[in-house]
Amino acid sequence: MEQTYVMVKPDGVQRGLVGEIISRIEKRGLKIVALRMNVISEATAKEHYSEHAAKPFFPGLVGFITSGPSVSMVVEGKDAIRVMRAINGATNPVDAAPGTVRGDFALDVGRNVVHASDSPEAAAREIAIHFKDSEIGNYSRIDEVCLYE
Ligand code: IDP
Image (cartoon, rainbow, N blue to C red):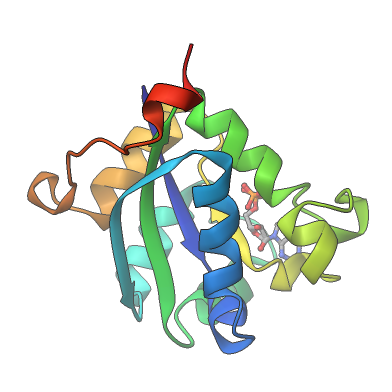
């Protein structure tokens, strides 16, 4: 089983989309093993998005991601990293397919509602930035017997 880091960004929280997004994740069969709402600090935001530090949109991105509460999760399941990226859709919502979160709820790349780690390395790094080991739960979902062959 793989784990990935997922965030409902401040725009998703302010638009009342937290339940919708969590519902999509759960219905797909992925398991939420950690969950928190908080306002991310500037230092944490800069660390999270460090790969974009030199990009022109970096100050706006850090400012936005710290502008209000966001919801952070660790999501677990078979191929969770790829599946979560597919659930979220393309980074630029204009390119995101209908049926994805961004394809259904967003228009602007700077207000694209959700984040999910894009590789195993990114997932490990981002989970460690946002959660302590002791905050990540370990339990079985009763439907795992049907979800997995
Ligand atoms: P991802 O969120 O799909 O992994 P990344 O390329 O890692 O996409 O970009 C991180 C975030 O930075 C995006 O989700 C988006 O919010 C923001 N971003 C990326 N490119 C631009 C841009 O050209 N203008 C404004 N914001 C951008």
